Length: 502
Ligand code: ADP
Image 1 (cartoon, rainbow, N blue to C red):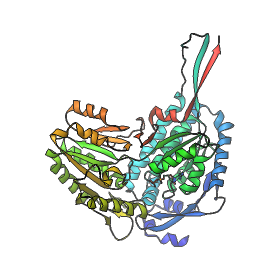
Image 2 (image 1 turned 120 degrees about the vertical axis):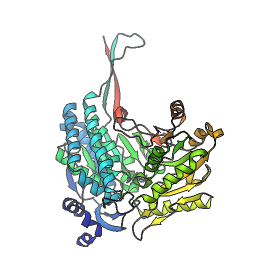
Image 3 (image 1 turned 135 degrees about the vertical axis):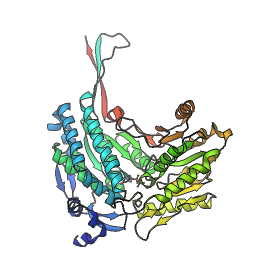
Image 4 (image 1 turned 30 degrees about the horizontal axis):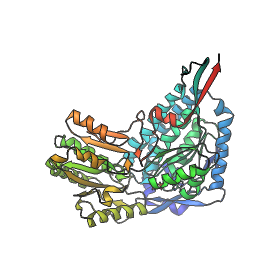
């Protein structure tokens, strides 16, 4: 491992992060740090350079089995099973505090592992994670059933009990590795479930750091387990495990369908947060400066590797040139570089595969007749950088407009006065329905359009609308269920109806 210390990126890390990154990583099962049963290792690559900088265990089905057993035991009896809701909430709050105390370290780890700008990681991913942990800590003591008057008038006292769903398999992607894990972990713990978390193979490190903090917070052994490994092995084993009660997945729609099929083995509960192709509609009366800033962040934040990314921009003809001028100059001014450098605004994409995929999409858009306004391909001499790219004059039938690219590529479609109503139909013409936004000063139109757009999250004069208290999830093939808010607690609980003969 010592040769890995020569890696250029390590010079930018704080000593504690360098120590963490270089240690011999293990799986976290039943409160212990253990090697993968088969002993395999996965390489972890710095996307800013393409270099391998550390390894993590390649967990497989035997490891998933051990972790599920530990989670089952912790769920059925012992300290966690008997813990008061208030004590659970206190532990969660403590975990939130620890995440905040270690925020700079977690941000550096995420920036190194995923490539994203370290300031975005610190004030986006990590800050959201501790806020969500605290928000969910509050729900621990408020998970009520209801008293229900019976329709038949039968002489029963009837009520519902809301209880934890059980052992949860949670499979998360690489784009917001820590944050996606916390979106699932926080409500599951608030509800009293136990967890086996499988982070993405590209970005396994923040999940392992989170496990250290869970241990430090004092959660009982077996409540939270982490198995790093590949999707087809560890992930698939978790999704199909007969003793897992619920699987929660964030990732591609393609893999989401596999998770669903695997979950059919024991009909475990399933929640899915999948792909998107979110439209942004700009009417002629919009505040253009504000719209440009929101659209730029809508598409380029996290290098476009955001499931809610605003990838389709519907622009009214009267303002199209002005908006595009603003967007092009914004895109060209973005400072590209390794995520660990504090002035970086656009880091690399996560992997060579992702870079190739995005570049192929850009080429296909141009081949299909789109006009390249800025960007167009890879940047720099090493790493997986792709320039922020704007394709004008695209059409709904182009692949770049229909398929999820997951990169910094904006597709522009212009519309006329006559299309002011039908543009909403075009915007809804997608297999996805995760997010959408509308930019206008006409308050009636804003609400009218918000009601017609088929998406789980709608922005009016903004694009990314995300908060611990707001339910988040998709229509159509963007997924099943809502994370965050009270709705996330519903995902991790089961209802019992109880009748008492009077
Ligand atoms: P992306 O396409 O964004 O890389 P994926 O949907 O492939 O995202 O991966 C998201 C998560 O799903 C990762 O943790 C990955 O390891 C896991 N995964 C991939 N394939 C499978 C599978 N067949 N079964 C279970 N999990 C999988």
